[in-house]
Length: 174
Image (cartoon, rainbow, N blue to C red; front, side):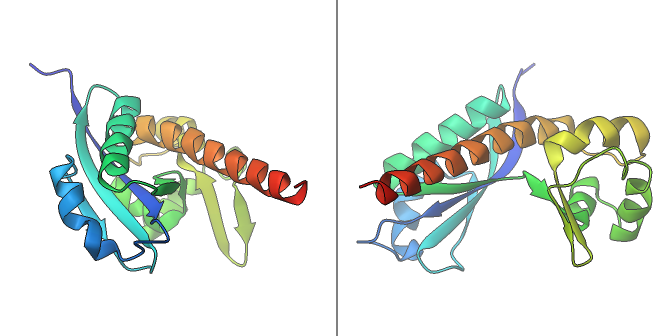
């Protein structure tokens, strides 16, 4: 019996300026071990890779995927790790239920779970922070490895934002 789980996640990368066409990198990604990823090439200069990676932990799944991508595309820059920030549509997809059901269930935790964003009729949360409330106070069923990965994703995205802020300050002070 294996101690591994399948972790489903998406990595969004900014491609190098000298090779901004995502299609040009597909073969290299496959050869570097990203055969468990579905590439998305919709936004110019970016590539999104939806992984279904087998690993012993969310952290090892993310680390190995990043290593594979960065070996295949030198100079690529990670800009987002998903799932992290979610709305009702994403929660419904993860729980395999309707958005209406999610909205109804979220009424039970609305006062407890602080959103990241709440305006214009939209509310967004860090999935990892919702975990406690969703598993204990609703009937929504999201696989535990999704929550495990969402915590790693939140930490990775926070690090990305801190690095961007540091780069801005460095540029302003130069």
